[in-house]
Image 1 (cartoon, rainbow, N blue to C red):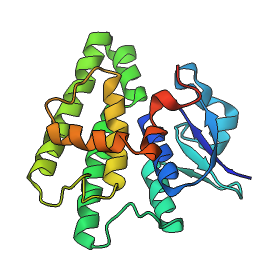
Image 2 (tube, one colour):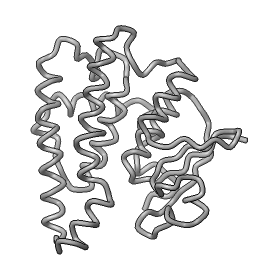
Image 3 (tube, helix red, strand yellow):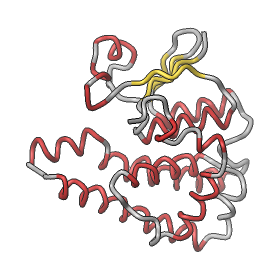
Image 4 (cartoon, rainbow, N blue to C red):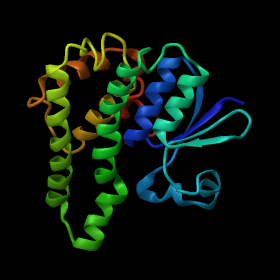
Length: 215
């Protein structure tokens, strides 16, 4: 059985994992879930992932892995080429720091559950939700831009000239930002790196518009 990727085309965490799988050259069966229709809350899916979140990666032996960063690190351990982390400990810390700025600072505040709750509990209308999303992206992207622009370790990509875990997270977040019409012009280093990543087939094939369930 081929691995099954349970995901949603627009989910940034799903985009991360698609890019990682593509970079490793791994085949998978694409299993789509429309989050706004609650397809991730069915008994069948909750049996796979009780959190009801995407993505989840179902392995050949039936093991189900959840949480995109945990799955990506598993991929790096089990399929080490190409590596997603540098060989030196300081480099690994830098790459993880950049990745976590997106995964732990932006995403928890701007995921679909939070945005829906803003409307349901606080009556936030579309403009207010967009402002919320943009605020938290800007807070962290300003810091990432400064980090990347000032560091000699920044190369063609976030860390040197090989895509890393940081680039996987950055690429997915930029696509997520486009849903809210957030331009990249204020972050020229990020924009340059995104352009480089978008020219790589493994990343481009992971982009939301290129998925079978894209609307």
